[in-house]
Every structure is written in structure tokens, then in C-alpha cells.
Image 1 (cartoon, rainbow, N blue to C red):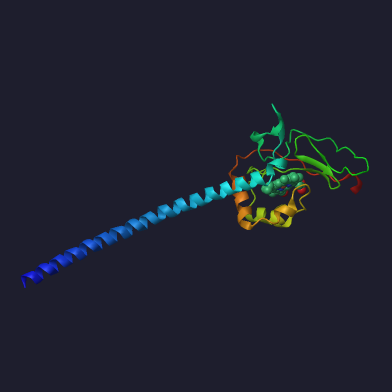
Image 2 (tube, rainbow, N blue to C red; image 1 turned 180 degrees about the vertical axis):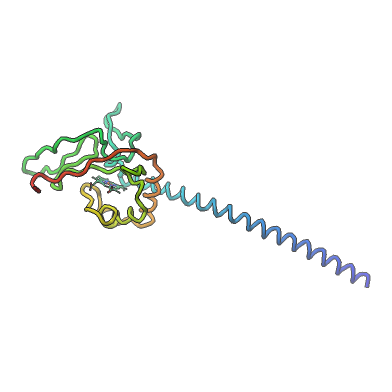
Length: 202
Ligand code: HEC
């Protein structure tokens, strides 16, 4: 009988110890999950922004949306104005008329204004400035712009040479990454000019 009592007591103590261990692990786990999930969201966000930067860099958004300045080794992007579009301090005179023939498009020395059969277009400010950039755009409007080639998905058609045809092939996830990166940039106030219609359209 004594032995039996000893066995039972030991078993009960062991069970209590195990139960306590399980409970404390469970509550530790529970409180940990919140933290881990929080970090997960932050990690996803920074991964998304990194993906967006990668896409902006390889897809040539800077080629047209970042003004060029003269550097020691020739023209280079002015990264203090990265992706802020045609500089409002550089008013463009009317585009030169080209002689008939195979030459069709002219480009400003800033690399941000273009004239062709569609008229004159100026690249837009893609930084998150609320008044002059994409600060008040929703991600849905940005996706719709990329998918339809229309401003915010419902406005006028986005003019050349914005590579609308190529951008249609982007997945929604990649467009979201592009937007996340653009929205993470410093906001630059720069009101880009309105496009000018071609002379023969009037
Ligand atoms: C070859 C030049 C060129 C390249 C490359 C280019 N864009 Fe553009 N983009 C333009 C021009 C020009 C406009 C303005 C056209 C207009 O006024 O309709 C424009 C307009 C836009 C607009 C519309 C903004 C608004 O306010 O309506 C968005 C958004 C945009 N570009 C994003 C991008 C992104 C993101 C990339 C890179 C993936 C990119 N662009 C690459 C030339 C370019």
C-alpha cells in the first residue's frame, strides 16, 4: 500500500509539473505569436518595398521620371529629385517642328519631356507628395492605371512614351510592390506641366 501511495503521489506531482510546463509554454507561445506576427507584417512590408525598388530600377522608371543633370562624367540622374518628374522650374518652349521623314520624336535635355505625333508630354511626379505626386492615390487607382493605361484607371489616356503596353503585363503583386516603394520615397513637391496637344489637332 505504501508503495502504491508513493507511486500515486509521484505521478500526481509529475502530472502537475508537466501541466504547468505545458501551460506556461502555451501562454509563452500565445504572447510570442503576436510579436512574431507583428514582425512578420513589418518584414513583409520591407520585402515588398525592396521588391518595388528592384522593379523600379530594372524597369527604367528613372529613365523618364528622374530629371537628368550634368555631372563630372556627363549627364546623370539627379537623385535629389528622384522620380519627381519633369521639373517645374524648366519651362519648355514649343517643341521644334521636325521635317517630314523618318525622325519622329524629340526629347528634352532633362530626359523628362517628349514631343511626338501625340503632342508634348511631361513625366509625372511619382513621389508621395499629396498635391503634386501620388500621395493621395490609392493602390487600387495605381493598379488600374497600370492595367488600363488611363489616369487612375478612369481619366484620360496616359500618353507616350510611358510604356503602358509593357506595364500591363505586370502582376498585381508586383504593381503593389512598385506602389509600396514609390510611397516610401521622400515626398518632393514638383507640379509637372500639363501635356500640350499636337499643333495640327486644332
Ligand atoms: C519611356 C519613358 C517612361 C518610362 C520608362 C516610364 N514612364 Fe511613367 N510616364 C511617362 C510619361 C511621359 C508620363 C506622363 C504621360 C501623360 O501625361 O499622359 C508617365 C506617367 C506615369 C504615371 C501616371 C501618373 C499620373 O499622375 O497620371 C504613372 C503612375 C507612371 N508614369 C509610373 C511609371 C512607373 C512606375 C514606371 C516604371 C515601371 C514608369 N512610369 C516608367 C514616361 C515614362
